[in-house]
Image 1 (cartoon, rainbow, N blue to C red):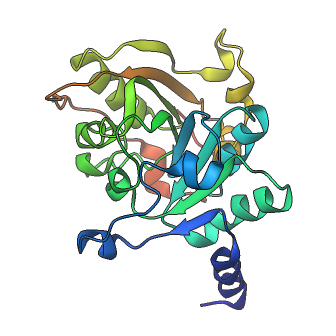
Image 2 (spheres, rainbow, N blue to C red):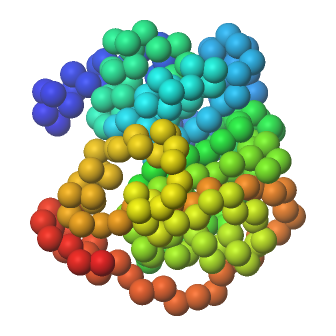
Length: 250
């Protein structure tokens, strides 16, 4: 492991707004002390909590924190070296409405209590074209999210992936989840929202390669059962060339 990565891990241990919890400890039955008490114990207010799942470098988490000081934001990712960027930025800026959680998203329901979260952002998640249960908009994740997301809480997806967007739209449709807004070309749409103008590291890459950005915002209604869509979706051909591909056609 490089010295730079070791230094970042050392920083992460010192940041008071970063929480690092192993999935192993949760599977062994250890509880997370902040569950149900994020506002009471950490944020010290009663503002709505918004999650960014798979936050990468945390640009959206930090950006949202700047735009909405009346809300609390938590970025979640398993990669500590990536999380460090947003954690350090928010620390140096003295932001009190931003936190980061390093853990597996599959275990996210262990960290938040019923009705504790108001919104979820999914920014450029891996579409997991071969693993349905790994997709962050799959029905197993909807079941997980509804354990802590308020009824009719908002879920936002921004993605470069036509596969991910098509799958998510199908999942939303078959489960009759209310759609607030949906577009397959965000920056050519009539939606004017400063939130959507926050561009992550990966989004800038995809835009630079000629990809359109897709966006859907829907409400998660409490349901006893979710139906998994049974559809064939053409895979994103450009992903097979790796992230270093320079020119992409869509």
